Length: 376
Image (tube, rainbow, N blue to C red; front, side, top):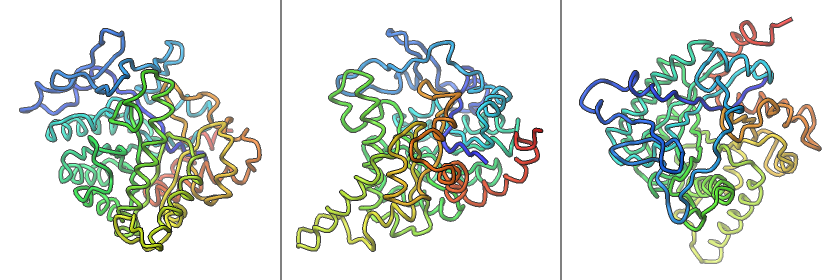
């Protein structure tokens, strides 16, 4: 089985009109507009999102028309593309809602997630066993986000909770987010930390080029998110919580775990650097409660598996974004030098099942009946 732990839908521009709940907030629903640089942006309360920070003004990363895959918004076409690659199950993240952390009004942020979830649930109906939704959490309204997560998981069959690495500069060890971790434990779904463009990200205030911004933002933000969840005691308080850090490669993980071990050990010399005492070394949490996605062709994968364990890495295609290597994402992983077929198979299947748990595993018998594995 091949499980894509991080694919994306691309919500059509008109979906806000159809899926946003008609009520007091309907006139404030987002719109898709084109800015004066020619980039398509989200207009929310009269402001273009994602909001730009520091020197960087252009979005970059625009997709050439010939690389736009209709499967982003058409589930039948997506299933065809999944069959081309040999992907059995795709776990689906948003596109427009990657800018959600910058929405200032909690009520509007929550309403936006509800609209996207209704649309995504309809998208997944094309093949409920193969297309699995992720609930986007509006951390601006934690109580509302938890209630919406429960609805998505229990009624729509979603298999995880997506959160950004920070919310408007608030790190993930903020006490206000405790109900989110409690809900993920109770529902037995993972929290999936996924950076997005222009989101108050580390280092980007000094960058004016998309190559710099895109290279720095995603891994640096995930490094900070992992650090604060460990250092802030999130994993100590929630020993059953599973967390995955996505779309930043995995080569940084051994270095960062070792660095955090070194800094945490300084407490033994009376320096008291940690926010609170930890029950384990930082690397122990990495090896027991954390997963990380790898990129096709990422040469560091065998080293990472040896350093932090063969169970920690999952496959991600990033379909259907501009930097996805479709139709070579699966082949790109199998072609990594030094990666054994057995290790590749764990990345494609076993590790993803450990991450997503029973809610995804229960769908797999259906996949063998409706998916490509029965062909021929």
